[in-house]
Image 1: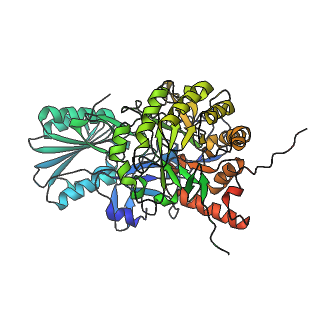
Image 2: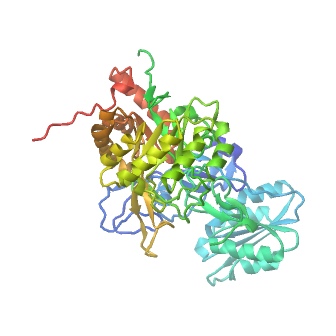
Image 3: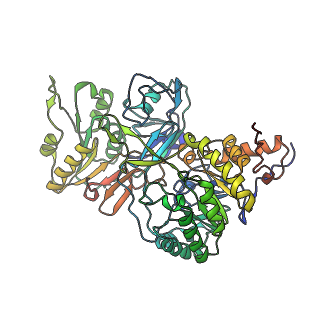
Length: 257
Length: 315
């Protein structure tokens, strides 16, 4: 997307809220991303997606920003139908930042599934600051692996480890916490993005080993600017807003339901 | 073209530069949107701040929001840091905007509401008080509005506690919204606002659980617009017009056309809520559209449009 203002100011960890456009109603499917009933419903053949959807910034190139998304529900399906040259409304950059210190030993980036893209601009920033990083990337099966992104990380990180939950030739099998246990050294700082279960497991490993750990989290969101109080995460200091107090949280502050 | 149309309107003694009011719960405590380039609080005539209760409230478990056809279902649960913290931390910052701020009070008894009202009475930068007797997302939230006697008790207690103009926010779930509105006016309400959200349910067919942590939620957005408009029209004719009390109309307003419908139905000012989540710049566009309509229809005073619905005679 051509978005000069966002491209100029977006920092690692931040996201944008995108107006995904119009969805085409398929009367035969059901859709667990959104609440609308589909079977036997009588909607028009197309319908505007109502709320904007949040997407992490993957890459910044001059005046352009890139996101990578998977088609999960109606919003992302509509987004995938956009053509080059189409105009979309984008609000951003939103949210807080991944913080890092020039004094830290090394960054251990942990990504699960579609959690990989937000870590790229962090890996770039780390390298620009002369800091070392490794990427541990877990996916369910081979098709989920975002190959072009992995190649980008290979130019930025000291090491890239990919594990798949489904046994696949040429890949390590298992959960991402196994390579994490092996790789984690004293003084490393963990940055994790992925499904909630993975984040929790990563936070536990980091906690046991005494490593600082930052999690980029997700929750259903509406406004993106902190007013609606929809995207809440319970923390040691009460409910916090994903969109302005997050999406990055110190793992020690997160309370898991 | 002649002079730029004047969108100013008098609402219960408040001089609104525009007939547009941000709805409570969609605008934080007044300064969140100003971070957005191109947005100014002056795009609105007034903004109703997020609800304030006597004690802090944690709110409901997540998920708190889900998109539904042309709308959203929310169950936030009146999360707020409590009236004292709001007055201390947020209100002092709100001077210097050419936009009025309206506080919003919630409570679990008439006495509770009155205590919150009393605190706002002495607070800076508050021009009026909206009394939320109609939240669908907390226990007994709507019961104050749906029972005219209870509604009158709360509004009466609030009126005794403050000299601010008092706006009673009505639930669309009332057996008779006109009876509730009438009771509020008789108890001294200076204005009525309607409607709050409609109670709704969305289900995840995979898990067979409700989509929201609170199970049900309040529906807002264009999905409720015709329902809200009908209620505004009825309350205007049955209560507000005879009593000379203005209505702040809410219900899925996204465009100038929608806002004009509410004005014609009898609202003196129009709330914008869900639209702010979809497009924070909506108020500017709506104001521009209203100005264009005024020019095309040679209106120099917006109040002459209010309640001009031409009801058709029926056999």
